[in-house]
Length: 100
Image 1 (cartoon, rainbow, N blue to C red):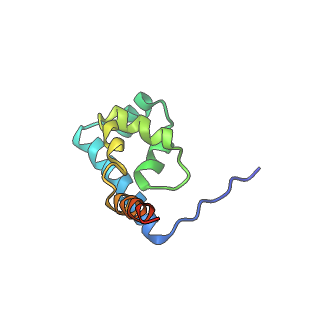
Image 2 (cartoon, rainbow, N blue to C red):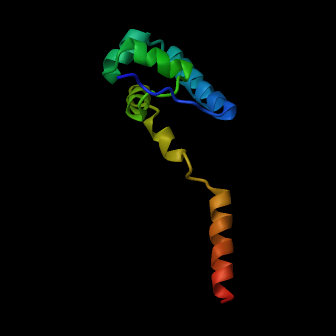
């Protein structure tokens, strides 16, 4: 059974690529090898290589394991924590409900 290739918008590809590069830089700043991080994260070295390239299709759990090894797992908690657009939409909905 062939796996389905993940197709992303160019802007999403750029974000994923930058994310992978940030992970690679964090690993290198800690002077850890690909092998060391892969072993500690319990993933294949090739999977870590895919993560650092920002290849789509890698499981989110693999990203989280790597971030945990690097001590950066709490960075994921910041994703969507500050949601100005969501708050504006929510506030607008609350205002329009009050007018009924």
